[in-house]
Length: 347
Image 1: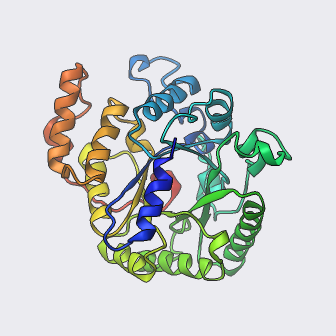
Image 2: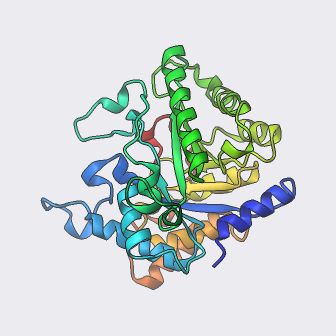
């Protein structure tokens, strides 16, 4: 079965100015960052010693959303991808593309009581490309199609010559390995995670320039399939999209917020040129994840606007007999569409 991601990327590159295809991803790789709390709270166990969902419950949501066909990409940790992609063959007859987080820089090591994520980001990779592709080291050529063949590579620039050079060096090594092994990737660039690294009003321009500069020396064979960045508003988005129409720009979802926050962010980013959105906590904290993703899909495809989507979502919850966490009025309240500047507030 053809993957919707491949079809949409081909259409975008064929006519980047007029193509309205939009790529939607469920980012369920939070176990690479948040530990026990990654799967989210289990409302039915509130007040107990086990307030969080289990890893298996987290994976079951991935199965349900994948089977719905509403997303184009399911992003997972390498260990979850091994289970769902290699062992269960979940994606074999699905239009959904499996993907795995290919590195985990220190600014996403967010532990209860921990402070590692507050220090300047340092490069680190838990996952090996071979593990993602076939489940073990040194894949034979015919084994490389057994697992996922798309990875998320993340960098954080902090306006520091030594730190940023180290990040770029590791990025180069990853790109070279990925090219040799036929491994595709998309590039996530976080805002600086050190306070004061860049003036607040210049962060959008700083990140745009960092991306363009980092990729200027990278030929087609080593370039990312698309980008994943924080949404910094219309000007920054339009600037980056206009610079190179073939540099497909995607946004990250931001912290949980309310339902209007999620729907408005997607709507605004799409309006100003984004062609990809990757939502993590916004999906994972929804009352009914598949229904929430269904509404994201309707917005991404231009069929609903944010206010109507919030009302429709509440109506769907009522039909399912699921009480909403917030009143309709509270869920319609408009909040900032900008996303936070570090992983602790962005996923």
